[in-house]
Image (cartoon, rainbow over all chains, first blue to last red):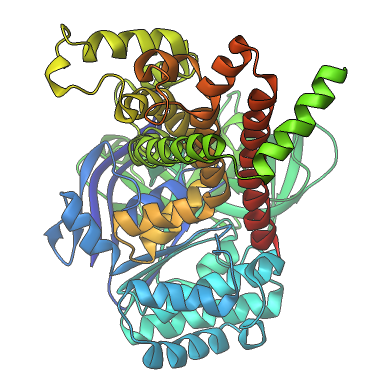
Length: 331
Length: 231
């Protein structure tokens, strides 16, 4: 449905995105997870044809979208709801009507569509309210309804439930589920890993503007104790040493490329060493193999095929994984 | 002080009595100011919009150039236009010198940069999400620009008002290229200058009062429009 290849994007001298390939399929929900500043919002704006990437090809239904006219046409089928959405001056109803008028939908049909869309996100009672008097959560729901009313082929949402309470958040994700059933290609960005796992068919992890650097397998929710610098985080049965000033609930990411694999315990600087059984070996390409090791939780390590051969690693074998405390990312 | 009060009293009498000279000069001034403002904003607002909303090579230089043009000395502009329109000048054949169109040309050159610079500042201050939101909802680029203009409407109105004020109050260029010819190119400001030098303080005062009244009226209208927008 919507696909990017060899995407590169940035602002000034700063590179924000470098994504080899990323696809949102029709009738599926894709979640993009990653810490703040990982490029999620930028990726969504590029996918929504609001920013022209420095390099790379976007395809909608297989057709490359290159010229301004093609981008303009594509925008009529792809809609983005930003994390802090903008509502135009006037009432909620007027916002809905404006969006529908841009799609040339007649008032008689539009009114019904607007009402339905607001109902779906539990915002019926907001229709007559002035947009600038809504709370953040209400504004977010109205913006989602405004996008739903357009029945886009591709629906993109940036942290759609960031200002919602638990019950509303569940409702919003159910709506995305309904959109998938309708046949839309849905993609949302979230830093809430549980939401992403629960509501998506595909999960893509983004870190420093790149996909696949952090595998979703190596993301762990935990609560960090008070104090700065080096500390210990509890993840399932594991104690993971990390270096951060963050406290409270966080997500830890262990880049699979930075996990050392050996047959015997190592004499090394790595503060984290876990022993476990290999449960899966998957070969990505000629240069990379990912092995999943059960060390109490599943931990992925990416190594070269030659290393795999040399260490004679097979499913069921016991290996030792080592990770430097500094390699553990916290977000 | 007595001179001032006397001038004020007699000036008010001239206005209330509908003195033909005062009416004539005011009408011409308004015609010049309105025409110049429309033309200056017709050029300046779109230019300011482009400079304020799009990224292009040389944008910083364009903004610097605009800001420099704000400080153009009016007599110098008048002098250059005079040189261009004079019989021996490149556009002498048009025979525009000492007509009210000559004044309009000079005023447009003075006021367009004001409209452009203030428009650029106005649209630059608009939340970038306005344009993005309009676009992602399916707006054409033109309609997205209209959404930005609508969000910036009060600041744009200010740009138009300031341009109008500049044109109405300008004297140096109007004097040089218009020649201050009675019934033809005598505007409020050039008439005030002449009346004062001739010692007709009452007439100068009357015309000065009209100028003030016009400026006040425009600003009151602007305030009313803005007030309605806040409600």
